[in-house]
Image (cartoon, rainbow, N blue to C red; front, side):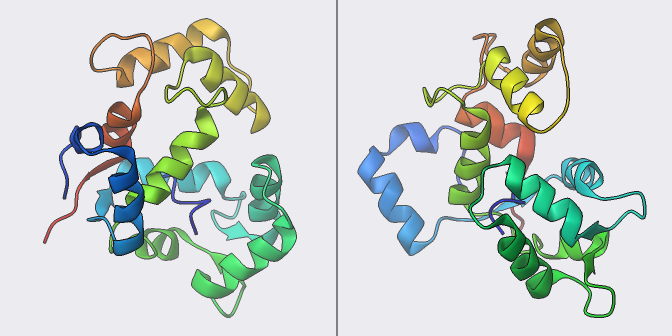
Length: 174
């Protein structure tokens, strides 16, 4: 599910703990983040077809664009695990339900890495433009710079992991 999950610790905690400790925390389980519902709906409707459902075709196309090996089989597996049994699709409620327990930090890191094209730990306007292009959407660099400014809380000219987490999630409710 991590390909879809573009998404209880404070935003700066990842900077406070050493890298090895962060890696170990993924093995023992990080606190979950509750995805922002509006952002999840926006993601869903970007993937869904005209019938407002994610079917095998749409999911396979997305996974192929993201470079997932054996995208067809992975799409089928994902739909089997969360989709409707009768029409083999994922509707908005199924999509939201699969994230009801929150999103693990490793899933957020994976989503971040999709945008961080040069793997420098930052998402620049150029990174955004390249990712959108890979996904079949065309934006001018200036448009990407404007999008970046909305998320960039410290006016650094890039989105770091803290900014990304702030955009995609809020702490999960206990």
